[in-house]
Length: 112
Length: 115
Image (cartoon, rainbow over the protein chains, first blue to last red):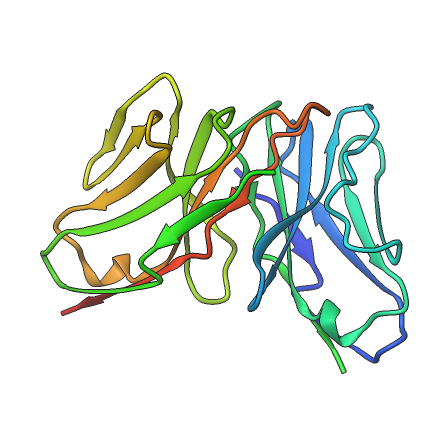
């Protein structure tokens, strides 16, 4: 079956611009995670959605980062006023309930 | 919070030899330990996982061992093949208290299998 999909696959933007990254989880997966992968920091947790519960935003690095999940399916990660240090690969993962997470291919963000 | 250390950062082996990657974790409440393989330009792919009520798990050429007392777990790949070349990540998770099983990852091991 279809895996986790993310779009765009690559995004180049100018410092100060806003960007939106999209994640389509595996059908039926109730949990959705966003992670960031950068050279210096490895893979870091950003935010978690589970069903209709309040999201766990404890990993978001600043208030410029936000995410939403509509209808319990598609999620959008928004970065406002991008900075060069936001350049990274943004990965989305989904799971059925808890534990085993399946990752998408990621969005490679470059902030010039 | 949880801290996961992974060693070595790079590993080169001859085709057919075994490869071992080791990880330690700090939070004794962690109870789920997956291993991911990441090829260039792709997202991490789950290759094997183990839960804290099990000491060892094997799937063909891949095995994982867990020592809860020492808080370390290892990935073993036998009869390595060139297609095993990739970056491998270990991770640990537990319920964060908010229902989230966020993964804490090691820094990764770049495995190169030399034909």
